[in-house]
Image (cartoon, rainbow, N blue to C red):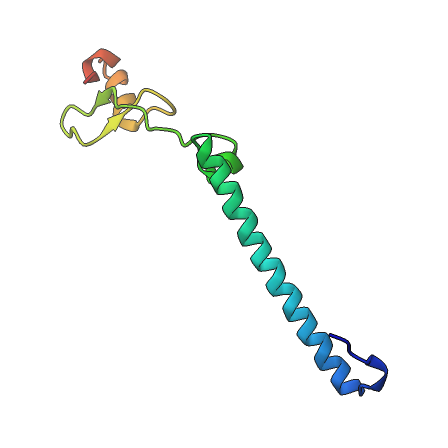
Length: 102
Protein backbone atom coordinates (compact mmCIF):
# COMPACT_ATOMS: atom_id res chain seq x y z
CA UNK A 1 0.00 0.00 0.00
CA UNK A 2 1.45 3.30 -1.09
CA UNK A 3 0.06 6.61 0.14
CA UNK A 4 1.22 9.90 -1.31
CA UNK A 5 1.18 12.12 1.78
CA UNK A 6 2.15 15.18 -0.22
CA UNK A 7 -1.15 15.12 -2.11
CA UNK A 8 -3.29 14.84 1.04
CA UNK A 9 -5.02 17.79 2.69
CA UNK A 10 -4.47 18.68 6.33
CA UNK A 11 -7.89 17.22 7.20
CA UNK A 12 -7.05 13.95 5.42
CA UNK A 13 -3.67 13.76 7.15
CA UNK A 14 -5.25 14.32 10.58
CA UNK A 15 -7.84 11.63 9.87
CA UNK A 16 -5.07 9.30 8.77
CA UNK A 17 -3.15 10.05 12.01
CA UNK A 18 -6.26 9.19 14.07
CA UNK A 19 -6.67 5.94 12.13
CA UNK A 20 -3.01 5.07 12.65
CA UNK A 21 -3.24 5.82 16.40
CA UNK A 22 -6.33 3.58 16.70
CA UNK A 23 -4.61 0.83 14.74
CA UNK A 24 -1.53 1.03 16.99
CA UNK A 25 -3.67 0.88 20.15
CA UNK A 26 -5.52 -2.12 18.79
CA UNK A 27 -2.26 -3.83 17.86
CA UNK A 28 -0.84 -3.21 21.35
CA UNK A 29 -3.99 -4.58 22.99
CA UNK A 30 -3.87 -7.75 20.87
CA UNK A 31 -0.16 -8.25 21.55
CA UNK A 32 -0.67 -7.76 25.31
CA UNK A 33 -3.51 -10.30 25.29
CA UNK A 34 -1.33 -12.78 23.40
CA UNK A 35 1.57 -12.22 25.81
CA UNK A 36 -0.69 -12.67 28.84
CA UNK A 37 -2.10 -15.90 27.43
CA UNK A 38 1.42 -17.22 26.79
CA UNK A 39 2.48 -16.26 30.32
CA UNK A 40 -0.62 -17.94 31.80
CA UNK A 41 0.16 -21.12 29.86
CA UNK A 42 3.79 -21.08 31.00
CA UNK A 43 2.75 -20.58 34.63
CA UNK A 44 0.20 -23.39 34.34
CA UNK A 45 2.88 -25.77 33.03
CA UNK A 46 4.79 -25.17 36.26
CA UNK A 47 1.78 -25.61 38.53
CA UNK A 48 0.97 -21.97 39.20
CA UNK A 49 -1.45 -19.39 37.97
CA UNK A 50 -0.23 -16.05 36.71
CA UNK A 51 -1.67 -14.08 39.64
CA UNK A 52 0.36 -16.20 42.08
CA UNK A 53 3.55 -15.41 40.21
CA UNK A 54 2.81 -11.72 39.89
CA UNK A 55 1.94 -11.34 43.57
CA UNK A 56 5.13 -13.15 44.52
CA UNK A 57 3.48 -15.68 46.79
CA UNK A 58 1.05 -18.53 46.71
CA UNK A 59 -2.38 -17.89 48.07
CA UNK A 60 -2.25 -18.49 51.77
CA UNK A 61 -4.58 -20.98 53.27
CA UNK A 62 -6.40 -19.93 56.39
CA UNK A 63 -5.09 -21.42 59.57
CA UNK A 64 -7.43 -23.68 61.47
CA UNK A 65 -9.11 -22.23 64.53
CA UNK A 66 -7.52 -23.34 67.79
CA UNK A 67 -9.72 -21.47 70.24
CA UNK A 68 -13.45 -20.87 70.46
CA UNK A 69 -15.64 -18.60 72.56
CA UNK A 70 -17.23 -20.74 75.31
CA UNK A 71 -20.72 -19.31 74.81
CA UNK A 72 -20.62 -18.64 71.06
CA UNK A 73 -18.63 -21.32 69.16
CA UNK A 74 -18.92 -19.28 65.94
CA UNK A 75 -16.37 -16.86 67.42
CA UNK A 76 -12.98 -18.47 66.91
CA UNK A 77 -9.32 -17.51 66.93
CA UNK A 78 -6.37 -19.23 65.29
CA UNK A 79 -3.91 -18.18 67.96
CA UNK A 80 -2.21 -15.84 65.52
CA UNK A 81 -2.38 -12.09 65.44
CA UNK A 82 -4.10 -9.91 67.99
CA UNK A 83 -6.10 -11.64 70.67
CA UNK A 84 -9.84 -11.08 70.39
CA UNK A 85 -11.50 -9.18 73.21
CA UNK A 86 -13.22 -12.33 74.52
CA UNK A 87 -9.81 -14.04 74.91
CA UNK A 88 -8.37 -11.01 76.68
CA UNK A 89 -11.38 -10.84 79.00
CA UNK A 90 -11.16 -14.55 79.79
CA UNK A 91 -7.43 -14.36 80.53
CA UNK A 92 -8.01 -11.32 82.74
CA UNK A 93 -10.64 -13.25 84.71
CA UNK A 94 -8.16 -16.03 85.47
CA UNK A 95 -8.82 -18.50 82.64
CA UNK A 96 -5.99 -19.97 80.58
CA UNK A 97 -5.80 -20.37 76.80
CA UNK A 98 -6.38 -24.11 77.27
CA UNK A 99 -9.85 -23.27 78.59
CA UNK A 100 -10.72 -21.93 75.13
CA UNK A 101 -9.02 -24.71 73.14
CA UNK A 102 -11.12 -26.51 70.57
